[in-house]
Image (tube, rainbow, N blue to C red; front, side):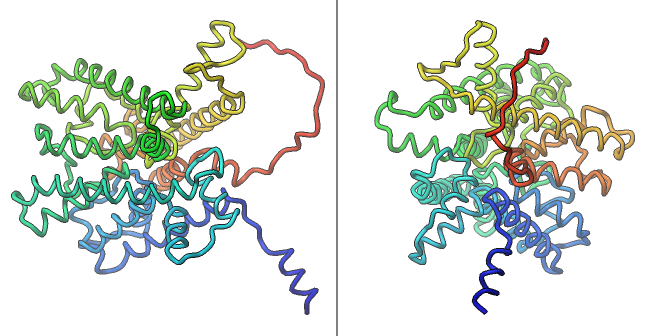
Length: 447
């Protein structure tokens, strides 16, 4: 009997942290789809595929919707979506660790390793502390934002609906989901400073990354901030300011977006639409009416995405910056990359290149498949939809609701990979190589 039990233990399936993360994520998506198919979750007939699409979009905090969230789902269905957004944004394993801590359980090495993988951390040190701060900070920020939004929406919709709308949009915004109760998102509030700044403040904080926020909390001086924090803060500031100026200039004379708005509304509209593509998903301007140049620029912003260990997606801003500095170093014929007087290890350069290459292949493959299934759809609409799904952004030029069943399946997969990360999926499927074997070196011609 003892030998039999020992044999069973040896033959049991051993999952690596990326594989376990993959399995748990799929389980919650399926659970969400099942809940959204309950009769009292919807006000109209919703297919299993549409329920799966909505569950995946919520769990991956994307925001793409094949049916209208505010009309197709009851309050129960919307609460399910809200719960999936919160779990997907803050992380399944983070919630698991919170339950462990509340029960007084000891967090072992394997559990810490899984959380490290889920939060995209470089070391195990401080992982549990990060999880604690993640929840405290998230709930405080969401609660405070709810109060601010209630000041606007309670007088407009009454206490019950006003508070509910405030809670829903606070959770959706902080987790960079982009789901809205209203079919036109926030277009009705394009000139409202409170709604614009509260919602954008939420998704900027959520997208900057919990590692950065924790570092800011504990570091008393600017010089003591980590290199990652400095890169994220400076990169976010530069890219947001540049995006505001570019979109304001491109859309200034567009009668379908900014041209007919008052001066202050033009500024607010350009500001909101400039900061939202980096995975937020809300829109205060009609995306489908924007200039082609603005659409292309928005696609770039969506592909770059937010920060590591954040609620956002994309290849991540730091990945983009590392590759940019690597190109600059190569052009200057330097063998090493230096940023803020710190040297970047080759490991991170290879990782950034791997993430970018896998992402480009994923986007290109999805575009190729959708171009075959979605007949008659303009190429720019397909490209926009795929990059929006990959970056877990949620913006759309109107294609989402008209996707074929095959097209919905492709977008579901792209959202899934975009949230988990290309490398996490690759590590969960690939077998580790053997570094002990080496071969002679030989040069090849490139460029």
